Length: 298
Ligand code: ZN
Image (cartoon, rainbow, N blue to C red; front, side, top):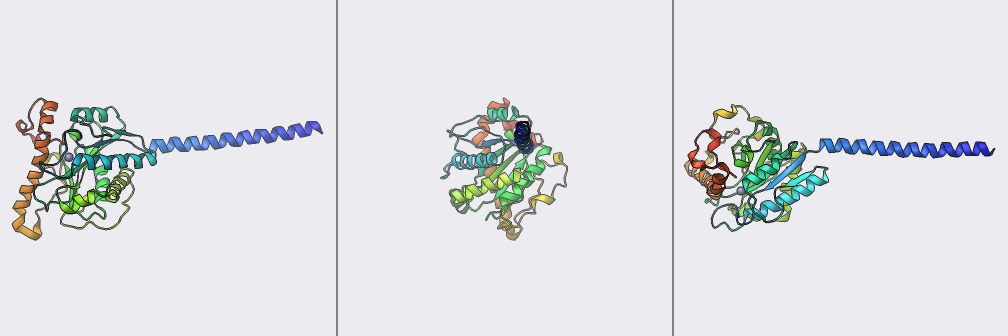
């Protein structure tokens, strides 16, 4: 009888141990699989420290807004199981080559740069997403599609552009210009927690390949949808757009003006970061004129 009781207890203990082992194995496998699925993300908040970003006299500093979105993005990605590395998580200046070095030391990662735009023309507005490496095109499309969803901004499209941080990185990289801080409406929005959080949420969903949280169309459809456009060879177009951005047709007398202002927006970034370019490349960006190599840095 005692022997039977002992055997019964032994069976019971063994089955408990077996169950515990099975549960542990199940969770360990699940976690490992989740970790393998979740990408490693290097987040690069633009500018910082003495480099406020944007243009001279700009009221809302780009460096602060970009950092806030970047930190929110980090928390959301971590919550989704991603490993996240920040090029900066405080208000410090990090030189572009250092940002690239951080990205390149994480070979299995993706690189996400957060910026906001600026232009002399107050009316200039909208969201644009940049990539440079071929393997970044779909990531750019996923992120852009989500960020413009529900945004009361122009869809300025996805563009291929050799920003220093995109050109020098050896991993897929995307740079999001999350709106114009020189535009009163977008600046007001960017200063609200809710909007910055939405930006971070949509970028997170884009990275994870999930559809946008908000399905609403952007305020303007002047530009073609981002996902249907990869039609021209990457290297044939000096101007970089692979979403071919048409002139603002609805107001043709503005077309020239807006192009000019677009240039001035770019010029502001060139001016702001030319110094870094020179340091990084050992020569001025203005001396380089071949294809995307001559593009500004950001
Ligand atoms: Zn910037």
